[in-house]
Image (cartoon, rainbow, N blue to C red; front, side):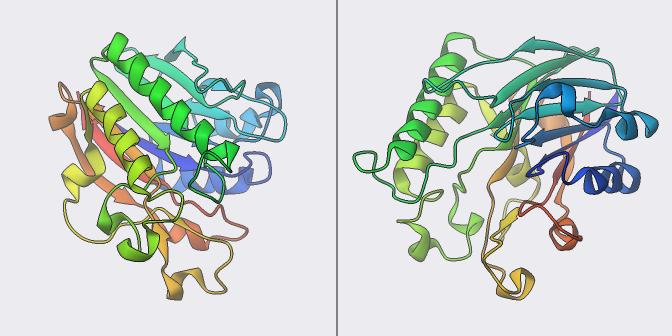
Length: 262
């Protein structure tokens, strides 16, 4: 069985329903994982997705904030939804495909502006969330699993537009990178995107603040696709759909894709 998966922080699934429909119609991933849906589950606009063949969904939602959903052309059943970091937020959903692959969809807290938990509660919440992720995967080591989502950390020097300038900016600080590495190690996760694209600058997010995001190109790779080591070799064809950042009224994130032959 071969299937293509995409992950995308959509920044409001109701506001940007036309963009989701455009992606599904033009790119046709078998599974689309969305973050920051900003919608209760019963308000997610499913009719148009279903008309394109995406008749299956598992999701967690809340009004106006956070929210994660997995849309699928393939049958999928919910297997888990976790709360981490002491936050009552809709930031995780996991579903299992009929081939036994579990897909974890995460929206890790952004962490605010200051990389200091003593003066910025949100940064502490982010670190605690990652610590709880690590501990959960240590306790229940995943097998035959894929982890995707907006992890809000660009770990490598070539995952940001300027490594030195970004070292004190939330999303690329050494402590965040270390916490993310511990999550990765705990679950025996392989960074599929960098397995396929091992070298070079690679981004999935560009700020709304830039007058011309494309020309400035001050991006960060915040969106990730990982797989457990038992299936990571089956992954290929990774890519970032950069063009989507330039669509009308876009999300500030671009979708990330990978194909798995299982």
